[in-house]
Image (cartoon, rainbow, N blue to C red; front, side, top):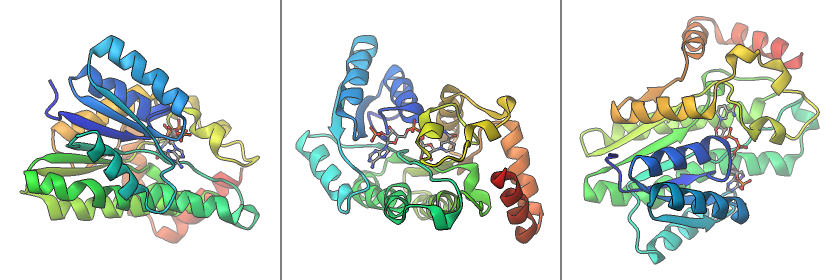
Length: 262
Ligand SMILES: NC(=O)c1ccc[n+]([C@@H]2O[C@H](COP(=O)([O-])OP(=O)(O)OC[C@H]3O[C@@H](n4cnc5c(N)ncnc54)[C@H](OP(=O)(O)O)[C@@H]3O)[C@@H](O)[C@H]2O)c1
């Protein structure tokens, strides 16, 4: 049985977020599902209620809008809920040469991947600290560990999430609230179909390097229960993160650029 009564999962309509919702409901948590696609959220909610007999709430919301954290906090309060596990998972990427990217789309990427993570921490962390219990999982990426030419804004947002998560982890230590970052490598989800450029990102990933969302979620929840600061699912990703940390940043960045350019 989970230690968390009510888990709020952003980006729950698809991929890793939907699997988090399934795993937590199956483990005994009530869940709050947040994303923009109302129909997908409602379909998932109906399945979870039927399979796990938990309370499932759907809050359709565009988290890239300014003030999304306050809007979400008000919606949760109106439902009479106290969130004790927040999973900041919603996110998307843009690939290709920076100068060819749509500026508005990349601003949206920064607001969702980084800004909403901060807004939601403001919305829910004070309550957790006041109650002396809770948890936050921030879904970053192995993209957080080095700059990524041709994936520049995405990698920068994930570096932000990782650094922000670690800082909150340190601030919350010993106060009953655990903050953790999970940094997956490539995961087999619709993420690759949403990168919004001609760059064929999925084809650059060797099959053996592609994890399932179920594996990533299992690693993340085990890491949360073990109170880890950081979870990197998979030995290949752990090894490449360790190598990246050893090499000069200029060399790593040029190598990644060469690989990403294809
Ligand atoms: N797949 C990978 O290889 C991989 C690797 C490392 C890290 N990650 C990270 O894992 C997280 C989940 O991605 P995924 O792989 O599961 O991709 P996904 O299947 O495309 O899911 C993305 C989720 O984010 C939601 N979302 C997108 N824009 C939103 C917005 N403006 N407001 C609210 N929700 C929004 C989507 O729902 P709606 O469209 O319904 O809003 C969807 O539920 C992301 O943060 C991603 O960066 C993915």
